[in-house]
Length: 101
Image (cartoon, rainbow, N blue to C red; front, top):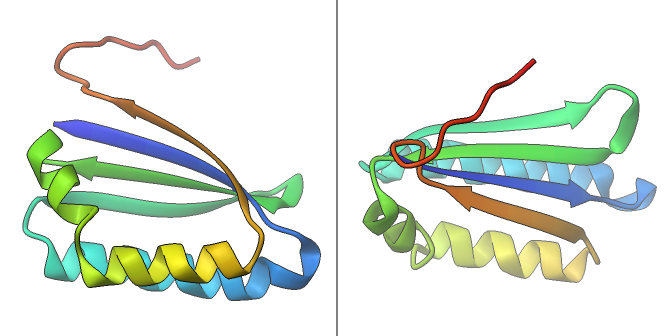
């Protein structure tokens, strides 16, 4: 499995538009990509400007395929227009262990 986490920071005037785009991206990834097993879109309850995406793919190759899809490229175009800040982390859970408290 290959996991990807992304944290987005959206200005107040762009939060609704970003949420719509992220939810659409999640739906398309889960329905159109065989290698996408999970795609969660979360909002920080204490900071509504911060969005957290958790994506899980069968392997890195499936994630690489995801990066070439039309819906991913469309999503990137939308967020570029919204002046969104992001932080990304990619891990392979089979090779790394993490403890969550």
